[in-house]
Amino acid sequence: MNPISTDMLFAYWSTPQLEISILILMNVLGALLLGMLVGYERSFHGRAAGMRTYGLVCMASAAVTVIVGFPHYWFGGLAPLTPTADPTRVIQGIVTGIGFLGAGVIMKEGFNISGLTTAASIWASSAIGILCGAGFYLAAIMLALISSATMIWGGHIEMILPSHHALAICLCFRSGYQPTAGEVQALVAEWGYQLGEGNISINRHEDHEEWHLTLVAIDKQKLPILAIAERLRNCDILSTYQVAFARN
Image (tube, rainbow, N blue to C red; front, side, top):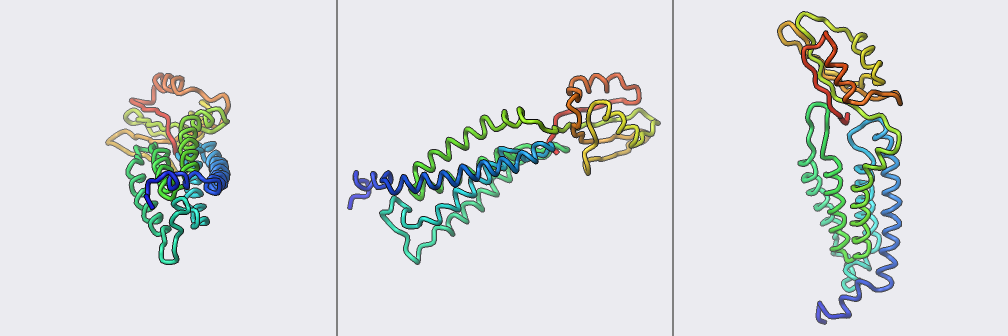
């Protein structure tokens, strides 16, 4: 039989094949929503991995897992899997390899972490490729559209929903000044923030101290970052400072 004949090509778009793809999509969408639900809790507390990251990872995991349950529909049903064929081992190798690739795009600078959503999207794209290779084209197309929509609008949804965003601050005190934890806590409380747990680093250089902090918003009336920078500029106990948005 000609491998690129019309009958062979239409086998990938047959009614049973499309029904299985729709069932796969139901699993994928459910996983996406549940992953985003878990991710929102992390995003709400100012963590690095948010709704998009959790949603993409959960969705990709579901896509890779669910197709294992339909071995007779792989490759359009034209070449049913035999007991000696085990494509799940190939999938395992793909997912593992993509995991190393995704880890390479995650960057950490101070308390700020970036690249997590990119890494999750790379893993999601591997799931799309697996669906294409298995012949579930409709599911692959929809997964690609869902992934793109999650990356495009997921960030806007996170911004609309209430959350405790974080700031990374470096405070360099003037020579001879000895700051106390209570003093720093009172200072940031005036801005509507609190010190992030486990994200404090204190360095001493000759006769002055340098504090690296992550602040988590606790008040709806929190000051914007430009207002905080202005207050730090007018603080006479500081020699230099640095403030930036962060994910802790």
